[in-house]
Amino acid sequence: MPYLPGLDGLRAIAVVAVMIYHAHHDWLPGGFLGVEVFFVISGYLITLLLMGEKERSGHIDLRQFWARRFRRLLPALYVMMTLVAVYIAAFYAVAREQTRGDFVSGVLYVSNWYQIFVGQGYGASEAFVPLRHLWSLAVEEQFYLVWPLVMVAILRRARGGLPKVGLQLIGVSVFIAIVVAWVYVPGPVATSCGAEFTRGTWTVFGRCIAVNDMLYLGSFSRAGGLMLGAGFAMLWRPLAIMRGPLRDKGRRLDLLAAFGLAVLVYFMFTMYLQDRGVYNPWLYRGGFFFAGVATLLLIAAATHQGAAAGRLLGNKVLLWVGTRSYGLYLYHWPVYQIIRKQANIQMSVGQIVLAMVITLPITEASYRFIETPIRKGGLRATLGSMRRDVWRVVAGAAVVLLLALATFSLFSADPHCVGSVNCSLEAAANDATDGTTVSDSTVTDGAAPVTTLAGQQITTTTVAKVPQPFVAIGESVMVGAQPLLESAGVLVQAKEGRGPEGVKNAVILLRDGGDIGAGTSIVVQVGTNAPMNAGELDAIMAEVPADAGTVFFLTLRADLVYVPANNELLRALPAKFPNAQLIDWEAESVNVELCPDGIHISCNGSAPATFYTNLILDAFGLPAIT
Image 1 (spheres, rainbow, N blue to C red):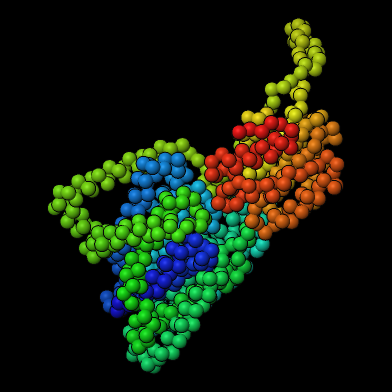
Image 2: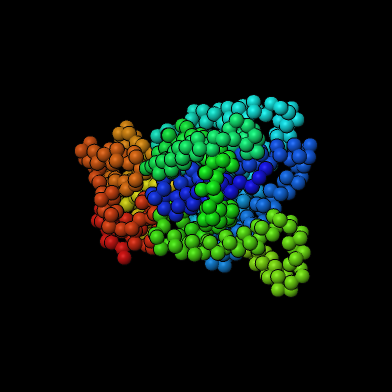
């Protein structure tokens, strides 16, 4: 198989699209489709290589194939992970326990399944996830492990019938696209587990799985692009094409390539992943598949010696980027995270320039001193050359020491939940274990004699609790203000993922436990996590004691498709219930800087939480805190 520079140029377009999307996804909402382009190219090239080896030597040496793949991929990956581990241990120790699972799954190439397992969706806003991008490398590496075994069986049986097998593989890709479209859950879906709103989640072996995230990250659902490329390789072999009737069709292929590029560009500017909490239906209902087909059109022209597409895509600039696309993909995301400290934040132009100033030299050094030497000479030869230079030996020993210290630091950190699934399940478990909060305010409520078996009488005193004057019940937004509210004398019952049913149950627990009673003023925040209906809010009010004080409902601030309707329901409550009033958090929250997700108050210092707390204290008639 000849070297095909046009494919490196196509890789360059793909990696640049992904890097732009990761930096500022409003600039290129569908830039993540660059990963699908990578998948199609990988399926095509790996299948070509395996067929070529079979024809050249009569068999496929699986051991050598896997060794070549490992030499190509693992050294740079482990170097990147080492650098990130050292950075976390030295400069960002708070993230140690949160990233530990990412490191283990990254080493084992199962990052995509780990992220599905903990509910760490591709578009989720996490505090610090420097290895989230490894999900796609995991999908590819799993393909590299399994596909050669499949090809051995195919080449043993198919012999001269490979074009037919190629069409069947493309049919498999169509089948995968149909299954993805069928399984996809449209509309608002649950953002966590443990809440009563579970739309868009499955329970698999007792584990809560977000369906749409699984479709995006899963090895089987994302195998469509790999199968497209593999099937096309059996139909479109560069040298064979130049010996057949298509050898002089280069110009027509250029037109098809232009159309394919136009489709990809259009998709990248329009095919967003999710908007206001709703995943894009067009992406899951054919978007991935048609992006793959457009990539095939570009591959057909880029691999045809008579087409101009290969020469255009193989220009010096795209060639430089394409040959280093693996390193660029590896290093850019951790650098982005180190700069902004949280995923899903739009970076400024200055931050992007800084990221490139850091990423490009690291990528070039990795390509020259790690990837290329090991790929060409092997790991043993590279280590042998290092032993002959004392300074390289010293540098290597220092790296090993730093890695050992960083590894110890990561694995000695206290455990911490990761991802929306893990954290919401942990919060639900803690809530079930802890029960309702018990106050210290008690009064004697009479005494009664009890006769023991020995005939002695003792007197027991029954104690009744005095209702709390101020109670707050809410969800994850309120969790950010819980310490401040409690310091002001408010009893707080808040947890992540809570919905109307959870609020109603909290009211029942606190009421039956004596914390809510005569004169208790209550503040409620509910509706950020899922759509509500009027009956659910009515059910909350029905559980509030008749002699309780005012029930204040906070309106919602979140750019989610169902929040406006939820706010309308909340604003209708004072007209339905004389003891219900509003605190307009939606309007007031514009006066403070919230977290990057536009919802939570736990970022940007203590100002947002203090502002939120004072709104509640003002409604209760309590003095503000500073």
